[in-house]
Image 1 (tube, rainbow, N blue to C red):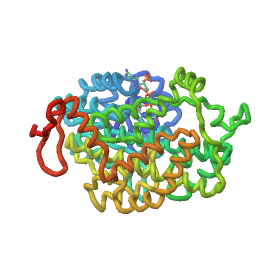
Image 2 (image 1 turned 45 degrees about the vertical axis):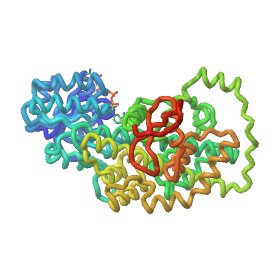
Image 3 (image 1 turned 180 degrees about the horizontal axis):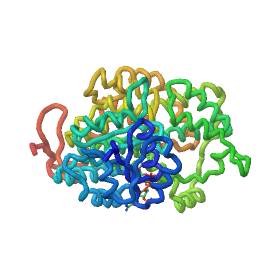
Length: 476
Ligand code: NDP
């Protein structure tokens, strides 16, 4: 047994992770359900380093030095359980099984318990960065028992992305914490993409510009506060020309966004926790609306627009307004995502360090951005920060763009351009800073029809009013 680590599941992600390990000098045991993928990995990339291929699970496990570290990189769900069950009879106490797939975190919690009972370590590990990241350095979010990180951590940090020499990998927390954080990462990614798409749509309508011109604007934005992987690829995509038609590529793509489910999981979990992640939710629903084909057909046929003709006179000022509105909305979406992490961490006792999460997202992953440094700094100033946008740096930067944000959202409404994420982010901002909310009326209504009781601003206790009788108030 000479391999230092094993990888089973050699589709795009597993193959590239295995190559990444090998390129960093590790001897890598490789295995896949169908042997052809194992053979082709060694045939095509054997020069990357030292691979130990096995056809059977028994040989694969036997080829790894103890305590074994085995990364599973297969289709999430049933296949992951199938692979775990196949490995178990061959494993020995202290071995570490690592699931690098996009598992739903409750599954990870369940699997961790099962393996812990057998004396095995199970690490649910979020991996972001797609196939490119897996090969050249992903952002890695491992959870599971902390003691397993002592031996596993250095290897993962070695193959992860680095920003200013700092690895984009850290132990996130026990059991499902790693996959939970990866899920929220993906939720934030949905919001970020939707906000960028809305900015593009606003520029398109407001400026009456073509895709390539807007691509140039994104290119300029990428030199400032908004600098990020998603803005960079947006600039690229918008300037890409379809080879077949000669048209802007984005204009020949069907406008129905799909999803694999991590956004939906994020929203479902936020509903359970009662955390308002309106940006991520609107982004997820915007994808759903885009795919609602019969509804959109009916809407197009029957619904009036009654929108004005958008007459942007100062084009540069408008572009700057959209940029500021995008930045402010983005800060809100991230703030909400970090709130969700805090709430789940408190509920599950995970002890997640939010500043560290922002740090490991600076490189390797899809939402990688310079601006994440600012988030890390905010949590370094106050590890228990209750609201990220209320951190002095963010409060100041959002405050400076506030007029622009309001202009953009109102112009969008007046001109009939849908901006669910921009608009809801502004509504959240105004809601969370409001002195008083109409929730007082909701409470009164609830007490009226359901005797649900209410609390008062002027004294402690719980009260109920006799709405149908003499309307006296009494303690409930
Ligand atoms: P896929 O999700 O397409 O899964 C294919 C792999 O799963 C193959 O190796 C296949 O083996 C194996 N597999 C499927 N069913 C079984 C089974 N019942 N028993 C054993 N093996 C099985 O591969 P990807 O590389 O795209 O993704 C791997 C994991 O990484 C997934 O969980 C995915 O969600 C996650 N992920 C993917 C990212 C991406 O950008 N693609 C980014 C981050 C995470 P065989 O060859 O024999 O069919």
